[in-house]
Amino acid sequence: MSTSDKKIPQLVIRDEFIADEIKDAHTGDVAVELSTLEKIWNINGVRKASILLGLVVIWQAYTVGFDVEPLMFPTFSFSLEKLIADLLSGNLPPKIWFSIKVLIIGYSAGMVIAAVLVLWATASRLGSDFIATATAMFNPLPAIAMLPLAMLWFGLGTASLVFVLVHSVLWAVALNTHTGFRNVSQTLRMIGQNYALTGVPFVVKILVPAALPSILAGMKVGWAFAWRTLIGAELVFGASSGSGGLGWYIFESSQNIETEGVFAGLFMVILIGIVVENVVFRNIELKTVNRWGMQR
Amino acid sequence: MTDGAQAAAGVSSAAAAVDPILDVDGVTLQYKTKEHLITATYRVGFKVYPADRFVLLGPSGCGKSTLLKGVAGYMTPVEGNMRLKGVDIKEPGPDRVMVFQEFDQLLPWKTVKQNITFALMNGGKCKTQREADDLAMQYIKKVKLDRFEDTYPHMLSGGMKQRVAIARGMAMEPDILLMDEPFAALDALTRRQMQEELLALWEDTHFTVLFVTHSIEEALIVGSRILVLSPHPGQVKAELNAHDLNHGNMSSPEFGELQTKIHDMLFADRILEDELQGEDA
Image 1: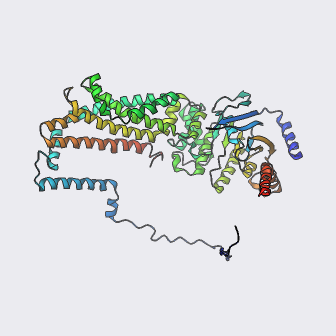
Image 2 (image 1 turned 135 degrees about the vertical axis):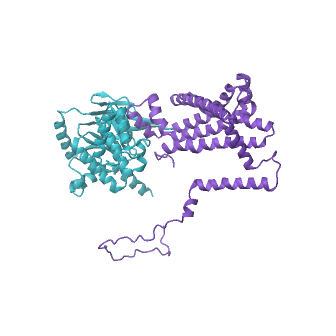
Image 3 (image 1 turned 180 degrees about the vertical axis):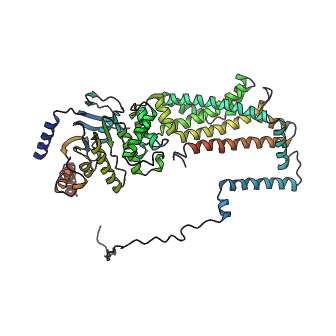
């Protein structure tokens, strides 16, 4: 406030000038090409693959070098051989198919129920409260904990697996979709109303695409829950319907003390997980939310 | 005041033969926040005639955007009525198309062309996809965005997005185009360019537009008639003519005079307040 003895900088008035012509900008060294090695190292897949390769090398070196008992910890190459042999002999493929089939049924059923719940929640406050309360209750509950109950109600079979799967998918998808809907901007809602969209067409044409990043996130979480839950449940009673799934294969191998079979089964579980996550979901994202600039 | 009264008289005699498109009569609009019931406008009335570039002008808090939302059908007045071509406005509809300030008014999952055809098909303007495509391309050319018709909105600049929104609104050929500060989020150079383009488009078809702004300059340039609103709650302060004013005569004395006149109207109270506060201190 008061004028102190502190010096304040003064304006320096300089001469004006105007450039007669703009010369070509000198752009010699602005961009330098990276070396080939750096370029390769910049590819995501290459870096991740080399991490995997490193792990495999450590595994193989440890089991071979220290001459570990194969019944406890077989070498990597032995486990891989077992996996390939069982795939080719036709022992494993039906088991994989069984697991995937059950997963698809359970996952789709969960999605349909989630869609109905979210529609209800969008239309009424009671529905919205229901989703909030039910998710708070059931989301922290591991789906596998429902298995004993499912076995009582539906017996040892696919129905029980589907029940547990629905439980693992439903809440993640419903919660994420509902939250996504609520975050759709007021402007987009008003645009939809402006062009005479109401009810289900409004949900399908405005809310679903606008909330797709969040819906896809829910579907990914739901998928991961479902896959884990399914393998876990199959470990308990996978063979009841005759063929049995991937989880049963792991359990069976362990019972027969074929440790390499256990590893082969785990490889398969991981492999399917990676494919769904990085091929199926990644491609959906690339074709939708990434293309639309809604997610980077 | 006498100037304004004479001008108003001149216009009303000419307009007597024509029916207003939009008739807003004694409208009070209220909305609720968590703690308060806020009266945004109090008994506001005005008439918009065909080919009007009617501007709602006022400082923040004068309820101009709320008033536009009322006309669009997103809000129902607690008092008074709003009629479009003699019919009470009850809900949003494609006969009144809204252009917003926000860039996210375009559907990000649709290309420039699809954004327009989406409106045309759902709004009932076009029956077939081909018809919609043709009409959309026609308006995309009008706003000079051909070559960008297959681009997704996130690749466009702010000015381009607003042009798509305007093209979408115009393609619907609504009874009245509602624009809620459509250029407020743009930089000054782009804003000026957009104002010029809007006026050029208006010259083509003389569409009716209701335009909200808080910039006096923009109101004078864009508007043919200006409704000045006072704040807290919004009430009509004046209705003025500005059809002679545009970018070309911004430095003319008339432009300056009207600008000063409106400025004094809007800020007279505030200046008084400031002076009182100054005396207190």
